[in-house]
Length: 251
Image (cartoon, rainbow, N blue to C red; front, side, top):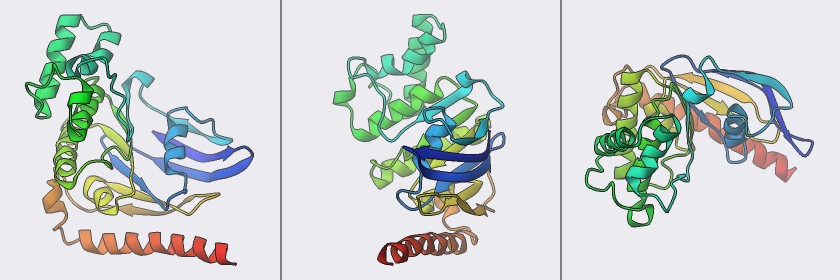
């Protein structure tokens, strides 16, 4: 996927200006930036929910091969966990019995064996997130777009789901564009991190290659010699963006 010189405006007011980035096959790319920098807006422009005022987005895979995971899950409350995971498979034309069996296998993969008959209201937040992830990944996307998908989870559940995800992404060579506020998460998961400047008229100001080898264990990634210096640099550059905006408001 390539974003080429993309600009985006709301009501005539510029939000993003001249943003370019690329996600190659099997690459995990994260996007960070201050609140209000347009991270989620960029993601929505990539999937076609917002029309850019300039520039373009190019995918090398078909729309059906793109999976989307937002912060709030999209589970249907009147369907069981199993039926929610099987829903997209049914839309793809898979026979119902096979779709349900495939859904059960994905639930087991994410530690949800025995919970397939439960409705979303009877699942914890972490369990619902696992169901939502299974729902997307059961369709075997080649490209995955994520907008703060783990922000509402506690630290232990978040770490477990993140590790499960990164193992699958590495094994299946899935390309990922991930919007997050968590700098440590961005470094631990990614091959490259991009920093957006403070909005309005936000743009990508820095690119950070992550020299931590794969396959990657996220706990060990935090102990890699490159991790702390990269986190310090990213934090310093992000703080500079926030401080610049504060000084502009004061003036």
